[in-house]
Image 1 (tube, helix red, strand yellow):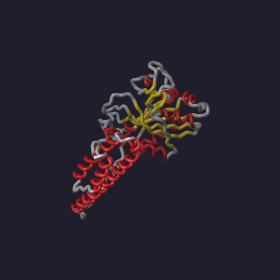
Image 2 (cartoon, helix red, strand yellow; image 1 turned 30 degrees about the vertical axis):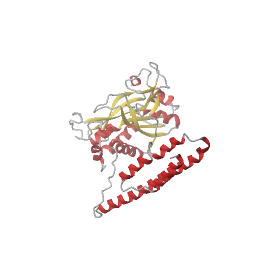
Image 3 (cartoon, helix red, strand yellow; image 1 turned 120 degrees about the vertical axis):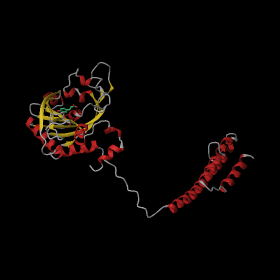
Image 4 (spheres, rainbow, N blue to C red; image 1 turned 45 degrees about the vertical axis):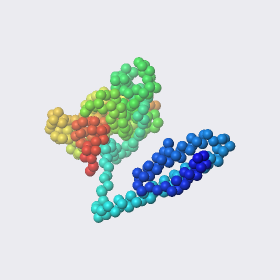
Length: 348
Ligand code: DAH
């Protein structure tokens, strides 16, 4: 058979194709359409054809291929229709339908939203910043000394860095949301009142108590005459809203490079009410955040006149607050996406 006869023959075969089942159809597809099937094989024969006849044969092979595809689709539809009729016949239409399951919100999202909601009621708005940051915004402008241990490879994931040398242009994953402070202060004029929720990264071995990424919410307020008493009142308001009206707070002196004075805040243990239990290790208090008055060096580095403006800042771990609220003992549960864990927050 020459190629013209082969095409004509296959054309007839294709028109007469019949399939009783999906298996039949698949066998036909392999016979005619697969790589080694009759129609693609024609393209091999096509290579031998003299140049001047190529256009004519090319067109008729393509026509044949299209006709075959159309016939296959036709057969497929006929079979599909019959198959779905069979399924409908077997269905019990009186059965109650499967309930559509609602997804649950992640406990960290619930806690973050609650924190944002509490502060938005007193005028804080949300600000965002990049997770891939530079040294300048994460460390330098926040008054970290060049040799500060937080800048070490052991704590920070670097993306671009020359070994040994610290440069404001080093690229890294932010280790805290305090970096958003510097972004906001360099792009907005006081008064500034922002809350910065986000994910942070630290080079830690993963265990029940530590993870290489977690979440923080940062707060920043800059204006004229902002005082430590303002900070204390706002944090007391937050603690009562978050953990109940009987919650007490205490501020312990601490150190952060970007605040002066700095403090850590404890709340009265909401499990034993401050009497002392295993959770608070008998002290009656649990630590929840770091805070302080923004160091004048930070204001100046961000172009804000520290003789005119003062401000406070605070930062808390979302996982920490979620642990206190829901008593999740193993931090890893938050990122494993085990539905048995996540479903427990269905009603929240
Ligand atoms: N950035 C600190 C950390 O990651 C938390 C923090 C402490 C933020 C004190 C603040 C602050 O804004 O004032 O541990």
